[in-house]
Image 1 (cartoon, rainbow, N blue to C red):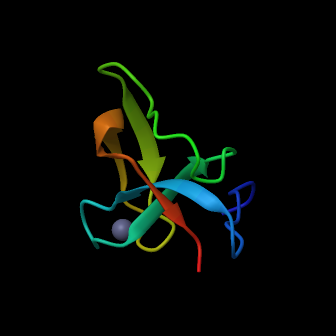
Image 2: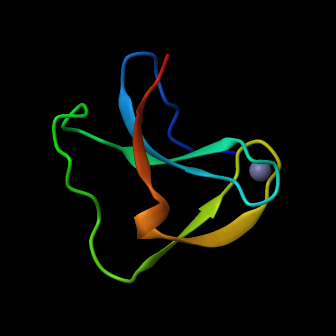
Length: 70
Ligand SMILES: [Zn+2]
């Protein structure tokens, strides 16, 4: 999809597992490169589209985890 940020090797990203295909969705970049343990706070949901299967769904911010791109 156009405009989709492309994770690069060595970067840290907040990811969440797709409800449908269980692959990782890269929500947005963790600019602290994993140093910061803090996560997005609050009851908010992120509306994300899976790059693998195209499934669009809302995910609670608490499901996010940081991951280094291999
Ligand atoms: Zn998916």
